[in-house]
Image (cartoon, rainbow, N blue to C red; front, top):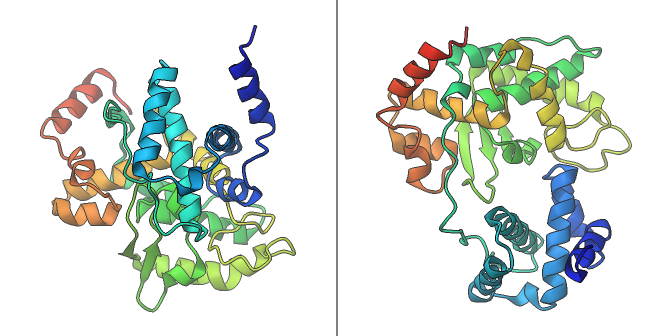
Length: 309
């Protein structure tokens, strides 16, 4: 039988009544539906237990997280709830309800960074395969898809960054793109490749207008879906998935593409500080993990016993 606490949690998952509608919309624009459901549940429980949470500071929030550690033995559960709470305060800051984000710097010390999966890294030549034209019923969709993939391959954007790019962030005359920051990355301005300038020109002037519908409204987002809505995470993931047949046995995701871009920049001899700025890493150690002296040795061993081609 379910405990009263679990019953309450399950009911909240189905109907997170005390989560503001605009907050839910904010989450839906940035995360898959399954993630939004769990985030809204965790935020609803948080607000139910702490009605004045919108006024909390760093100390009060860390106190709540400390209580979660005693309540849940599974560290992954605590991590997930912390991420939901971070999203709540990120929204308050985004919407102007707070001038700060008191949860931004909170991290669980016992969380271990995920190791780089060497077998999933791609060479520059392999990444270029993602830019090959794909057959689409409508040519303007092919232009949009290539535009999207080029920003992943050349600028190494995270999905959360990609879907937030607006038309105003593109400067064709300066051949640059402004990348909005996220909770984990800094905002930055990156150079566009020459071929991207022409591609973006064609997308913005020819393809994007054909994607605009009555549902588009006044959206300023660069990338639109077939229905004219700002493109979401699931649609980016689906597009990437259509290329997986090119890399049998490999793990192709937006993350593995980004990791490969960063690793290739370091392999080319670029200064690690420059690569840190390019990637938007907030801490140097996030970039350092890509430049371990034993990485190439390990990769050679992996290819020796598990050849990829």
